[in-house]
Length: 394
View 1: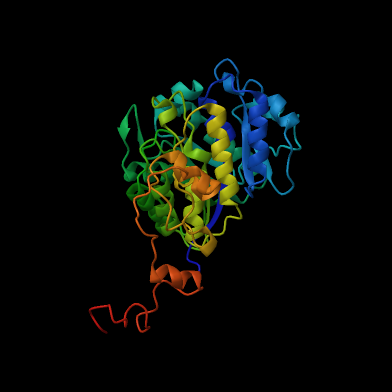
View 2 (view 1 turned 90 degrees about the vertical axis):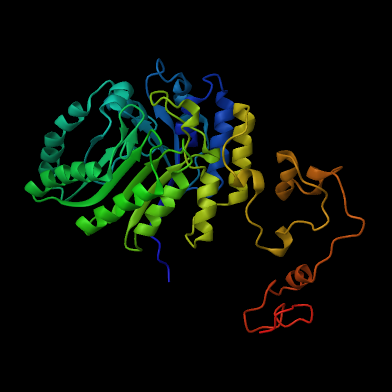
């Protein structure tokens, strides 16, 4: 029986990834990558952002991208817009863009006052000042359900760690304002721009929210990976939730990305999409994504930006689960990352490698697998448990 929540995944490589890369990357290359991502089975892709080219020159030609790429039916394309001017610019390209709106009116703010001042030239207090307006607008529209949330939820490079108690107290204050007007809170978002997430903190946070407000069944996590905790933290959140819950996650192919305001630059990163989705598939959470096509996109992105990215499945390949995907027992030494690409490129990738074996490698286990049998029988079975060469008999 499936014990996992419903997971909705969003690919952020064209926005979160490209915003920290060279501003001179060719538009043609970006369009090629976006079109390739569209063919992977991803259902939600962020194409870029409508922001000031003065501060984010990497997005200066977003208009060309959204007019020239090839939208694929069934894929939702969105773009980040931080203010009303950005929203109006995005509306000019809808469709193919979907103007992203939160499903719920949401009270939220950054727990790090320093970060929000650096990032948007506003203060945490400015963010909080909008709360009464958000509530009033929800009442005018007769909205019945709302959300709570925060950013920099677990810590800050400028203020240090935030205990979960502080996070919960902030969420309680937000929740109380919805309670006062009789609007039910069903959604909670937690962001982490400075990579302070840990599995323990994320699991505690999600669990405490669920225990205090069981009616909250929608969670949104934006986890950065500067300290290699994003995938483990996402897994912790999945463990804390049930099939009745929905969890929104995002990441970037290759794990690239970053924010110039947080102090870590390109080291900030996000969960590599190919690694996170590969994990989810093995957990029994269907993604609908072709991992091999996704790996092609990672390799394309590496070619475009001119360096290796941070994911692992794109380097080692998915775990081979079909006979035709098993490695050749008699391959030579595989030592380099280029040689390791044999999982897609075949034997030519390791041609000329060191071959130390005087006789071909054989194995009765491999013979069984190639015959369609399991490598190991169940505990009461014959192989290898009751073979003459197995010293301990059951």
